[in-house]
Length: 506
Image (cartoon, rainbow, N blue to C red; front, side):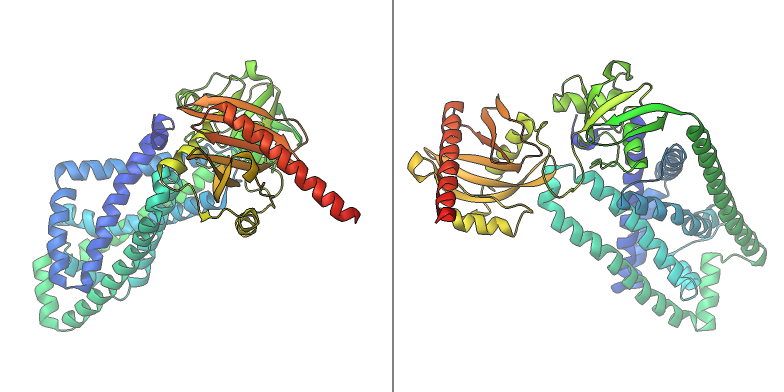
């Protein structure tokens, strides 16, 4: 299954409904931007949009998407076992909770007014009602909707390698849309205010649009107020349910979770292991935010794996793609029911040594193949080890020594920064017989010996450790040649160590 489609059914349903709503909002905001051209252009585009969105099918799809997205979002919120989460996720939730207070009254003024009161809610009608009294609130609604959608899209799409290629274009588009939309709204709003300053023009607009009379206006005002009160009451109810669930869970903490090189904590049944980590401040990476789309929250279960519930469909798909052994699980999906001892295999942006005990052959091959096939094998081209070493000083947070292998039939071509376990690592680019070799240098977390050998997709990988570093060599060359590279690196490192020792002695 493609990485962007991973997750359980409810997650995919929430994603689909969100994409529908984001598409609707995006075209609506682009329609706003035509106010920079003319009111006529705005109305012509609106006619095309409403032919789709206000058809029976379009109305049904939009209504279903709106109800589904809000319902599933609130359902996920009330079922959280901890409010500790990444900043981006908290920001997205807070923005999402603010949107209905502005959006639902807007829907009353437009779609409800159109369907139940026969109002022709054209752009001219809406601009006359909104500008300038509600211009700030309407612009705020636009920014909240767009921000919420862009955060969700970014943290969904960043799981795809192609996103890195198109990210500058997408980010530029994301920045321009709200700027142009608000500018178009302001220009057309002021123009409409100037036109409607003429009593005759305002009277004609009211007649053409079937402007709500005093009774209808009062009814819609009451509806706007009550819909905000009801949503506020719903949030209060959700808060109360969450508080009661937390009190109950705290009263029945009886699951012991032991982290290797970390704390042993008492967690409540029903919490995912990722929620346990967040609740007790244990550093634990989660690239997709706990949606079973990535592998970054994976753990090695040191004891208690037999007591865990079997993987659900979403976790099974991720583990199958990872080709993980039986004792490796996704922390965002498992809910311990018995004592558990685990090793967190990825920690988020922690300076210092890396964890390399679960660097897979697959991940090394994927990084090398991506660079070769994408013609991004080198970020710096140089055959001078000192030049390469100086370049890396400004790119990564650890210092490396670049071996000189000139006398070992390996040529230095350059270097690049690549990623293993979502961490930036130094990658030396060597060549042998015209074939590129990626040599990854990763600081070791311990002095344990490391030995990795494997083949995948026509590529060979050999890994070893020495002098506080793990080395991973990947190429389409035979492993015997990579073994020779290992011997050459060790000899070079020994020569460098001897030379430094002699210099220090003198």
